[in-house]
Structures are given as C-alpha cells and as structure tokens.
Length: 455
Image 1: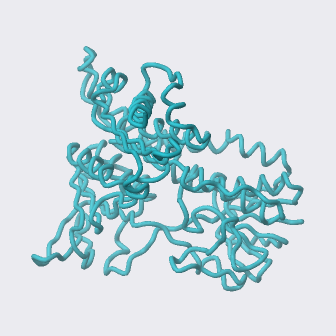
Image 2: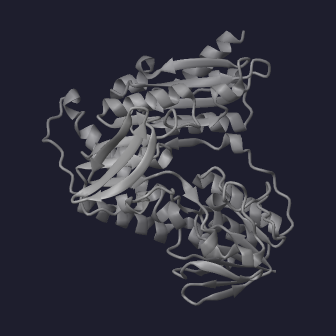
Image 3: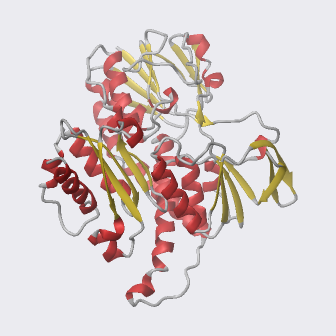
C-alpha cells in the first residue's frame, strides 16, 4: 500500500515512520526543509533565542556571586547566525531522519506547497505529483489573520525571529504561548514591549493564579501587560513603525511602536490545500475535522498535528502522527492521554502544567502549594520567585494535575507527568528518592504535603 505523508514536522515524521514500519511504501513530502516548523521556525530556534535571553539575565546576576564582568551587549546578527547554525545542525543530525531513511521512506524536500488535484492525487508548487492509497495531512498551520483594517501591516513571530536588529519598541498582540515567548525574548534583549490581550487575562487556558503570576513577573521586568483593554479599531503604518488604535469605554486610544507582532493563533490553509477536491471538510473552528485516530471526512485521508487544531505541541503532534498512520493501515493503537501532555514555555518567568487545572478538578480535589522561596535549589541559584501546585484526588490519592511558575518549571512538570502516567499515588512520589538539591525537589515537597494532608 502506498502512503503519502504531507508535512515533515513532528506529526509527519512519526506518521511516515509508523507507516513504513507497518509495511507501507511511504513517501514524506514537505514544502520546505525537513523538520517542519518545530525545527525551522518553532521550538528549536525559539529555544535558542530563549537561551540567549537566559544568558543575558544570568550575566547580570554574576555580581551576586562575587563575579565581576562588564554590562552584556547583544550582537543580534551574530545571534541569528547562531540560531541558523543550530537549526541546520539539528536538521542534519536528526536521528529521526536516519530512521526514516533506514526504514525506506522516500523524503522529498523543498517541494513547495501541496494541493489536491483530486481525492488521491497531490501536486506541489515545484511541479511534483504524488498519488497514494492513503494520504496523511500534517501541514501544520499558518498565522491567523483578523478582519481588522490595517492588519496586513503586522509582523508574525517568524518575522520577529529574522529581524536584522532588535527594535526599540514592540507591540505584541495575543498573550498565548507564542505571544508570551516573543514578549519575553525581546524584553530580555532590551526592547520596550507592550503585550496586549483582548481577553480578561493572559494565558486563558491556565489557572488564574498561574496567569496572574506570569503577568506579575512580566511587569516586574518592565513589560507592559494590558488585559481586556478594549476593541481594536485599526492599524496604521507610520513613518518609523506602526500605530494601533483601540476603543474602550472612555473613547479611542492610540499606541505606537517600531514593530507590531501578531500572535493571535493559528489557522489551516484550506484554500491552498484545495481540500474540497479531496472531499475533506473543516470543523466549526476552521481546522480539518478528525476523530480520535485522525480520520477525516474522506475515508482514505487522515490528518495529524496543528492542522487539526488540537493541542499545538510537538509531543502531541508526534502521538497524533503515530495514531493516524496506525489507523490508516488498519492497526489499532491506544489513544494518547491528552490531559497528560505537558504544556509550558521557556519564558521568564517559565511556566508549565500537566493534567487538570484547579478549576477543572473541582472543589473536592486536594490542592497543595509550595513557594520557591522555601525550596533549597531555588535559594542556592537566587531564583526564588515562583510557586508550584499539585492537585490530588482525595479518594484514589492519584495526581490529577500540576502547575508551576518559576525557574525550570518545564523540567519540574515533566517529572510530574511521568508520575501521573504511571498512575503513582502521591504517597509513592513522596517517598521516591529524588536527587538533592534539584528543582524537582519542589515537587517532592508538594507530594509530602499532600500525603500528610490525606492521612
């Protein structure tokens, strides 16, 4: 059986490898370079920039430990060269690429955007044509556009990463994961950033206290955070930047910056894919509609990753790609536990969560909290701002959720996610001999508190 996978990000790579492992003749075609957005425009370059931001921050902490150096100065073009080198190294040294080649997957890179000619035939912008018995769409998303006059003058996060110099001022529209990363990185680089969220709070999908703590941390760093600020009327180009005009109960207001970045979410490029020719329909949110195993409205076409509008994270995309390829070839696979996919970002302050929020768990759950200022490793490192919470089912004593704001939050939550996936009772985690002193010790502290409260 021939299986065509379109898109070489995490979802597409895992889908192609799974299809080949199941005996299919698999072809992986991508519009650009191998790795998709994750390697070329997502976690890899973003994490490299975030590391530079962390180094800038830590240089300023050196005097607290008796180390004296000069004021750090950022050479942004040199940093971008480093980012490109990292991206290229990751792309070339990817173990997944070697696995694909060993499994016999045909990889077609730089093929240009793909579109359906009919239900089983796909053509790319570079003139390549593919036909297959099963097709798996892993094409990711594109920056969402809003019907606001002048919106075309906004940059995207991709534009922000490729600037030739750090702008003096920046407006970031949207305070989800992408907007928070842009604001955090450029704030560390010296840009005066104003972050705007039309909703009542940043990070609307997180616990309210997590959102509040991150907002407080941003404001402490000099980033202006505006929540529920009103309705945007228009954007206007200026001589040296852009102006955003918005309205609230007191009238019309205008703010200006050298650059405005849109981070208002993702959409599926349905028009470019010509999905109608294949009989694939979109759901109410404008993404490709799928069931729990990636089946679309067309019986031989599947979809996985960001194109379906689910949890837009690389680990989830990998799981989706694996499941979609399995289903396409008639093999049952255990559905991924979506609630256990860790969510977080390498911002300053860092934040992360896995499982249920406090609101989702309900009043009957036990919630324990610990502050970084009372944990050994944060005290040693001088990173005492932050807190962690653990949510436990009182009857089963199993962990329902964990949320952290502060240094190494993402790492701490990974430990909680593994413990939850293993269905450990909180007593077991409380007695597990984690290394000391580590940031994971904050989680151990929470487990001990929870176990004591449940006795």
